[in-house]
Length: 518
Image (cartoon, rainbow, N blue to C red; front, side):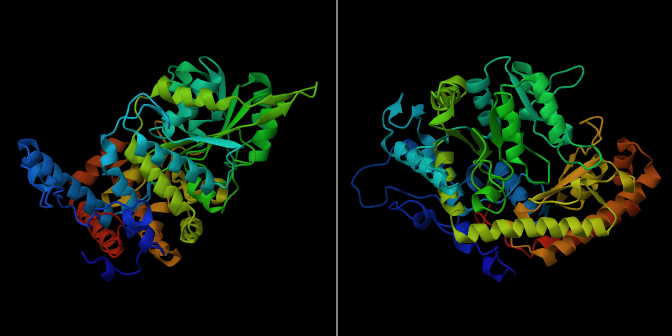
């Protein structure tokens, strides 16, 4: 595939997404090639014989030769990403510099502990990389090092959140987060009348706050009322499927009234926050967690930011200092994790550098424009959007008014090469039987799609959901019968195939960042 021949190109990001780590982060002696070739580090006229291990096909071969079965599956996934429309709001396509970090020699090193305080030797350069990642993480969010600290070791967002709870709340302490069916995340606490689903609810006492079932907006007054009764140790201002900016000031007021810490989980919106295109949680929160692979478009990893310095002044005029740093760092290691993933930490470092570039802000602005165009396009076709619109990168589509549920909508879209996820909507009684689908724009915006392209995306989604309505008329309300008709009805299969071919032709005309081969 000739990347330059594909129309549109990446959204202003040819250097960030398709550049080389040599130019973007480090200065190694060896330039990493675009294609995945084995590199003989010893072919430089040195007078010694390679060991049988280093000469072996296992150690120095290509994956396509050493494990063709696995290689074929990876190639199939590459093809799916290239020719499908990735609309899962938590997904994105990362850059070649990040991928180079992830496949580097950093993978080989153990480094339990913090920089300059390791339990293993040989970490001189690992320390440099982690300190660089910490420094850039603070810079990306315009934070002062005497007011904020940062831990870049969490393996992902869920471990980051659990480390905060472990260090700050302690077992059976009280936590409040947005209810999962209302757009919250599992790690914010979720349980049913018969079972505690999330480990947050197993090891801590969690109480959800809710959205207004009519507007889909967070009911801040009810949140404040519930907090007065529950008296949480920690309140979480964070979302997994909520399309409006959070009012962090109101969260702060509720937290202060109850003597609670305020945690901002910005996993979904951290790229938007870094770009300064939506309100930041840092002004009001004590702790902020994030993943780095969603809108931030970095590696799969997590980061915890925590305040330092004076927390408050008591009635005697005495300063009450924050004591979060040691508690959080020790909760990450040795409390919950072992050795950090140094290759991912390097990926964080270069992703944070990218997040400070002017092109990154342009990208994030386009993400929002595309989400709003997607929203308006679907509304014009008669679909209901939770909260009535979007301020961020995602929308939540309620498909009940067109006679569908989330599972049917997700399935038909997937068969037409449009990837999304079923999701609860305000008013749903069960997270296991959701009435909506969540759609996001970060990944497609990375590939270069703009507003007019999303008009065609809307058209394809509408065609697929109308086909789902036809199938429901044949099959009836049950999902099992819906799937049976999809498999057995020749006319339906033909319609699905025709729509799939159109989607894949459209998607295949846009470039995909990453290694050209896989």
